[in-house]
Length: 331
DNA sequence: ATGGTTTTTACTGCGTC
DNA sequence: GACGCGGTAAAAACCAT
Image 1 (cartoon, rainbow, N blue to C red):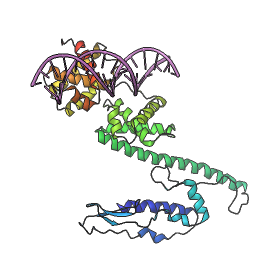
Image 2: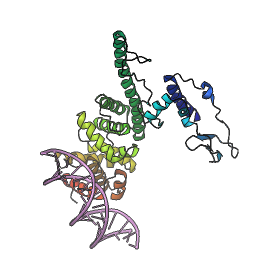
Image 3: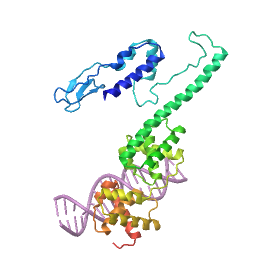
Image 4: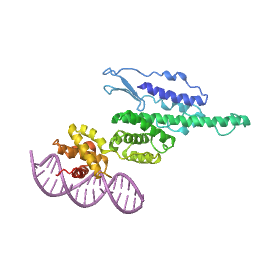
């Protein structure tokens, strides 16, 4: 919606204007945004500010192009403002923690005319600086948190994770934030890592692949930050129980309950015999499913299992033989 | 960095439909 | 002949040191 766009722009203006009493054209706010309909099909038109085009959302007709870029108009004002802006850099939006919104109190104990302040005033400014700093960092953390929580929400609903997992993961994220683990890492990355850890702690694990699929960051970075977070927060994450993967995989393969039960059985006997240690839980689950499907005559092919579990067929082969052996089922 | 373990990739051969 | 399966060797990934 163009509505949101206006708000962001408005926000930016307010800020830059507010600092240096340069009065800006206030009425800019109610800019005429053509709420027109498409002349071709009557569909709704959307304005793409980045490309300077107005496009019909139904048929894709470009209603208007080469529009005036209203973005950087604030540059034209006065020098002080330009300085202020250029230090902040390009007016990117969401990715900056505080969008440059915060106030800064100068460190020199001088007033606006360059005169030294009285000691009383100096003390006062010192106090203000302290508090301002507190609020500022607090605020940037709040923002950060808000975005991260949104991300966590999005991912966990994509993965169908229960509420408790979301809560644990936001607790983890908060801790990471408190301990200043964020600098140098992306919010998305840490959010993903927190969610992954939480899912495992709550015994509803999702595999690394599944997480990476719904996350906006790539797998490499995800794993790296995950390890980092776990280490730094010394989170206790026990190895996932293979059995907890079974139901999902089974249902994705449309397997009967019987197979699922059998798979669990195989896993638990294998665990008793200790042949599972050191092996990847996902691989074990995949193998158990495959083995169980053989035992119950509800054949699935290795490649099918491999597809839905993202475990290589080789691994499935190796594991399922071990599983059968442990359950002393002759070949 | 290193070495040991596990998983993946790529390829080959066998039997069956 | 395609497909499912099994096996192998080498590469890659992972983990603790």
